[in-house]
Image 1: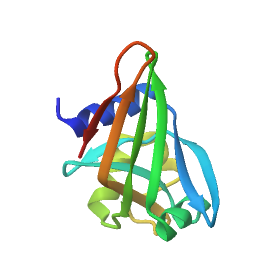
Image 2 (image 1 turned 90 degrees about the vertical axis):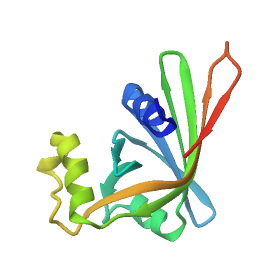
Image 3 (image 1 turned 120 degrees about the vertical axis):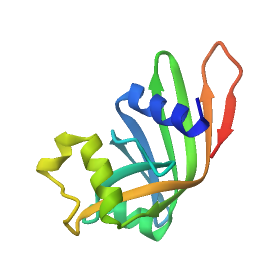
Length: 133
């Protein structure tokens, strides 16, 4: 399994992961649940009207942490906004439950992909393993 697929599957297995952004000099952390691969890039989704999207646009460096099956991941990198209809549609097709709040045509739907990402898989029993994509 490719590194990006492994990271995406881990985030899906975690179901809920936590995304950290920066708001001025204050860290902000909130739960997220989307993880999707489109055109061999790892995407997440939110709304442009939300503070999280504004924080990402102001400072695209983020970090994610999540747990699944007694292990955890730390994923850091830069998020890049992809405003293309195709990227939004792919995400919303993968998460039909979001379609009652977002659409690929609406201006509020925001999908971001990771660039220069580093993921570290950790547990209390194994040595940490780091991958990049």
